[in-house]
Amino acid sequence: AYLVEEEGGSEDSKSGQDIVYEATPVEPEVPWWKQRRTKVLMAIICVLSSTLLTVGLGVALSRPIPIAEIDNNKNTSTSTSNATPTAPPNSLPPTQPPTKPSYECFADRDELKTLVDRYVRDGCGISTTLCTGISNTYGWPMREWCVD
Image (cartoon, rainbow, N blue to C red):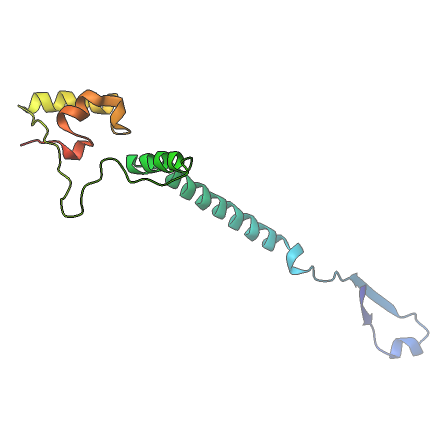
């Protein structure tokens, strides 16, 4: 399509001169989904969305699974294989609260520091089975330790 503008008036055609038209090409407006700014905006939105999704999943998947959940999963997988459901062997009557085992307290700061270093180095916070000596003597997890 061309935009045509007439140069000169109607008097020129009477005097025998040719009429000159100046034409410039006119491009139709591109649909919004084909415009460059829309494509750039969509690319930015996609990058931000994928970044947020990656960070969110990274945080969610990096959290350790509590030992109670692991034990529950093991118990449910073994109980589904049995044909008849049974009560846990160590269940107490509802009137008696479970008793907490008593653990040793630390003698001094040096003993505490040595065991904290070993607890962190050996990864004892993941499972009680990794450091049975420490967990049987002082308790598990570390927040249960007696530091009086």
